[in-house]
Image (cartoon, rainbow, N blue to C red):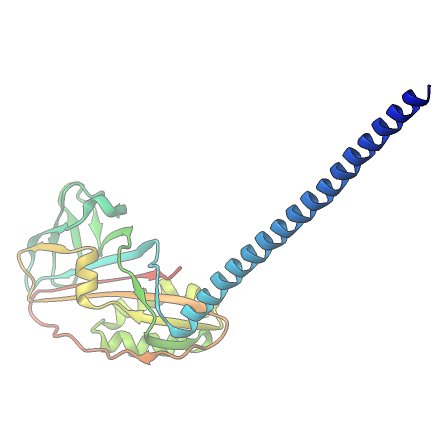
Length: 252
């Protein structure tokens, strides 16, 4: 019996040691898991904060932003010197999202010097050709204008005259874009260059106009002013057979 008691005592000691080892191992494992979780949280937090800081830095440094989704409401006015049949083709028809009259490879119209148009296919009277399409131009907020919403009318009247629009054309431009711009506390506004407009959507017009004026306004609503270099605008020549187009895109 004495031998059995000794053996039982050894068994209990061994079992106790095993339990003790298991408990210590569990504590160590739990500690390691907690440390890893904390490190992952810290890393994720640092990554998130880094992304936020980078975004803020980009805003503060006025770097490139993604362009607008669409170029909206480009309308084309046609003013020949005498009544004539005019064909208008766009260079990237696959990027069109809307068009009126319906675009089927080209528009063919009878154009009058006062800007009145007759769609040859339908016989309908028009005052312009209309399209909207995907914007492929990367917006650059390093130059442009910062305009308070309350000052937008005076700003557009002045700048659109410089850019070559008639009072009627500017009137239609302002009426369309005023709700978008006037409701913002501040607006960043930039007018795309001729090269950017052409690269995004070229126009092929027959007969060839003497003067082509194309305006695309980029804008972004702001809660606070930012510093940008003022954009220099040039007044185009407007004589002979004139074609005018205007539109805009919101920077997102």
